[in-house]
Amino acid sequence: MYHSGLEAPQGIWWKPVHGSEKVWATIAFAWCLVLFAMMPFWHLRGGQNPSGIRHRVDPVAFRTRVTEFIEEYKVGTDNQIPVVEPPPGSHIYLQGAMWSWTPVLRLKQGAEYILHLSSVDVNHGFSLYPLNINFQVVPGYDYGLRITPHEAGEFQIVCNEFCGIGHHLMVGKVVVVPSDDEQAAGTTVDTAAAAVATEGGSR
Ligand SMILES: [Cu+2]
Image 1 (cartoon, rainbow, N blue to C red):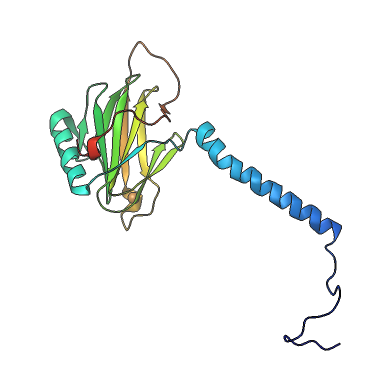
Image 2 (image 1 turned 120 degrees about the vertical axis):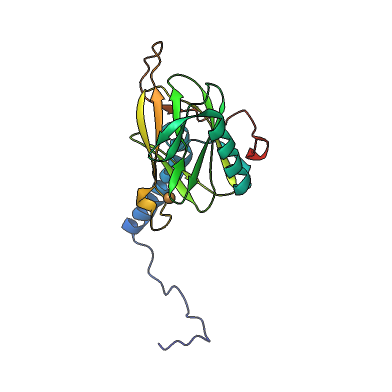
């Protein structure tokens, strides 16, 4: 029988859903729920996406604070990038900019620091190699993290967010100086939010 859009078809004109299709729809829905649950689970369990404190910060103020930080604790240079050795327990600053991470941080094994991380131009990605720690570095926001390096050695910071022509050259460095009293393995980032507020990040 001919139907137009003006008159509804009569009776049951559709085919009922086949049993196997119902099974697949159920499996797909259950899998969606598993994937959804994995997001909060892996955030807490996985460890490579640490949650820090976010504060708004003016990129110019952040750059100024980084410059002050470098002047205060500079101990040398590495490939024209200043190397700083801040005292344990202090606030430390790392600036992402096209296309460098400044400064090189020399930290003490087993000591705690409060790391402030921001970008002064575009989005960058912080990836600590060879450890599996990743997060976005967004201009205008100070990413505060309470960190305790447990393993001595040199670690590379790789930018994992494409940020222009020099992106592949954007490699920074963290040097962890061994302390004789601690022999723990692996560097961890405390996933608890850093308790110390940064007063707008421009402290
Ligand atoms: Cu980058």
